[in-house]
Image 1 (spheres, rainbow, N blue to C red):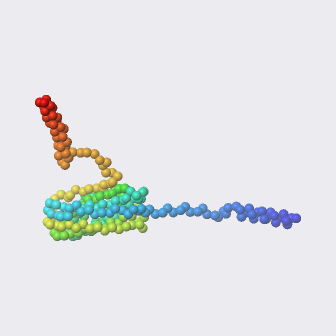
Image 2 (cartoon, rainbow, N blue to C red):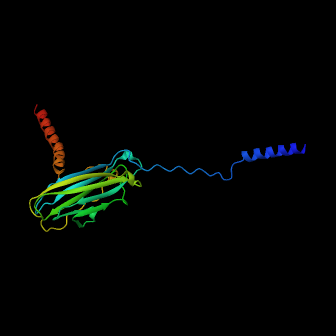
Image 3 (cartoon, rainbow, N blue to C red):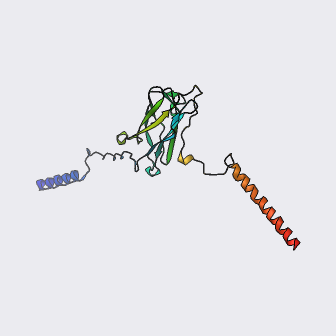
Length: 221
C-alpha cells in the first residue's frame, strides 16, 4: 500500500513538473524591422541652362534631385561628386558660395530630401581654357539608413568656352527648393505683366466710348 501511494505521488509530481513552464525558456527576440527601400526610384536630372562661356557670360546648369511622394516616410540621402576639367571653376550653394576645382564632393547625408520634395542646385561655371569642355556628375543616393540599397547615376554637362571668363565678382548661388514649399499661386504685376495691366485698363475705356456713341446715335434719331 505504501509503495502504491508513493508511486501515485511520484506520478503526480512528474506530471506537474512537465506541465509547468520551463524556467530556462527564453523570450522570443523581437522581429528585426525591414530596411528602408524606395517604392519608386529617385528623380535625378542635369539640366543645361546656358551652354556657352564668354567674358561676360557664365556657363550654368541645374542638378535636380527628387524623392517621389510615393516613397512614403523614406527620406533620400546621398552624395554628389563633380569632376571639373583643369582651368575651370564652379560656383554653387553646395560649395557654400566658394569656387570649386578638380573633384568636388558634396554629401547630403545629414540633410535628407523628404518624400515629395525636389532639391534644385544651380551651378555656375567659369573657365580660363577655351574649347569644348565637359563636367561630369556622379550622384549616389540611398534610402536613409540603408546604404545597401544605394543607386548611382551619371550625367554630364557639355559647354563651349568661346572666350576666357573675365574677372568679375563670383556669381550668385541658389539653394534648395522643395515641391512642398513652392508658392501656391497669386498674381503680381512685374515688367512682363505691364502690358496685360494696360490692356485690362483699356477695356473699360473702350466700353465707355462705345456706350457714348450709342447714346449719341439714339439722341439723333
